[in-house]
Length: 259
Image 1 (cartoon, rainbow, N blue to C red):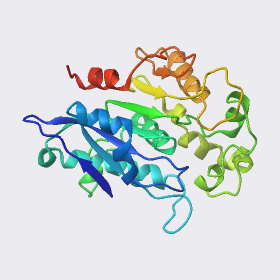
Image 2: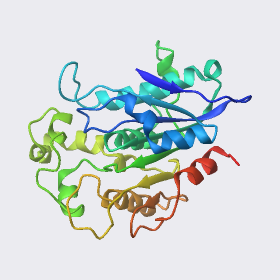
Image 3: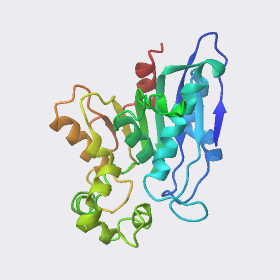
């Protein structure tokens, strides 16, 4: 299910698709309309969409990749309605907080999910987008990396095990789970054709308290972009970060070509 916040425009408007946080176990699309980015979109002629997705616990739960593939399907569906909803299918940016930021980053950097040979018309539609505005998003799901860099916490997060259908994060260090952990980690999918990203965190890079929303996650992703020599590395917006003063609306205007 999605909520669509339209804007009045004589020409097709750009659109931001937002997913809520909640550790892939809680939350609802209804909260997104009250977020600051929703207000920025309304004020600047940008359509706004918020979506739900399956959780990894509870009724109708689905472990990885269920939640993320719901996000992919949302992008494809929104594109399929572009003419009817007066939105520009070539100007889509993804956004979200926490789990929603993971989803946004994963979809944006993953290879295109379009399957031209599919019998499902939606599955033939591209999932590629113009960018991401991510809030507090973990960029790796690898417990070994998190404990070493973030600064570490052996328990990581209560949702990390259920995401992969196991009891605890420690099980993800076993060889049989390593491929799935890498696949779910946005940093794995960094490539030269990825869009510029806007990564916002509330914690300073030097903060030594553990938090699943630590800005060190953004630094991990930024370093990977730099390693491959990407021409447009992410904006890392956090206390002590290289782009501490950057604003979401300036990023969106640049990406969408707005004045």
